[in-house]
Length: 256
Ligand code: MF3
Ligand code: CO
Ligand code: CO
Image 1 (cartoon, rainbow, N blue to C red):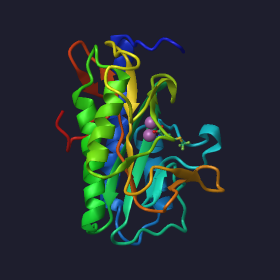
Image 2 (tube, rainbow, N blue to C red):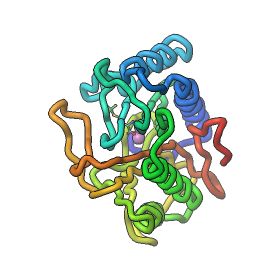
Image 3 (cartoon, rainbow, N blue to C red):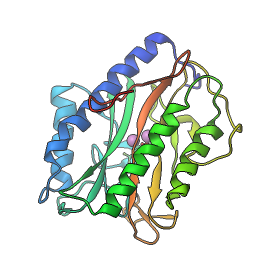
Image 4 (cartoon, rainbow, N blue to C red):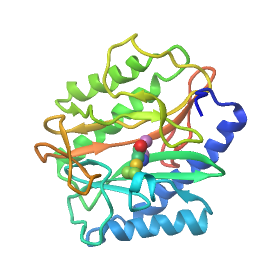
């Protein structure tokens, strides 16, 4: 579907899907502990989505992706594939990215978890990346441009000596997983498309501790930093309202 503006009824369906995706992230937190595997986390999320939520894990089978969530540990930027061989250890940082389809509509969200106590430099990267998402969300309203969003993220990242990943971006979302427009996490103020009430999209900044470059491993999915230094990502799905934004994937721990 090419119509980027959603009706209130359509946004209501996205609110339901978004809430379910957020609930998966709330549910899984207690299980992100040393010694578990990313496949065990995948199975728990899959079972919750399918059996409890009676919903569909959008990642499973999407362009051949083999699992129900993405699990991206340490130097993995995004699209990490859960595996029984990937055992989490103290000090790891992991992004879990969940997309749920309910009644034909999508909710897409991710957060970072620390396994045990993180090193101060890892904790700082995680925190600044979350601040980039929150600062971008703060300016979303009718009249803001996509360049304003990208600039806000890039400015906060680079002023903290981190780099913004340019090879992946946020996206329009609705009754399709990925649609126009692309939401770049870098840019110039006042440039690009102007936001309007009823637009729905994700913002999902990825920040690297070192160089911004990425490389996809031979599994065809796992994107890692070129210098193998740490990367972090946070994601929300949102709708532009008359005066601001509604976060469709907000968790109870957040206050918007
Ligand atoms: N959830 C990811 C996003 O934020 C997309 C994952 S696609 C998959 O857009 F195939 F890797 F699951
Ligand atoms: Co997304
Ligand atoms: Co996602």
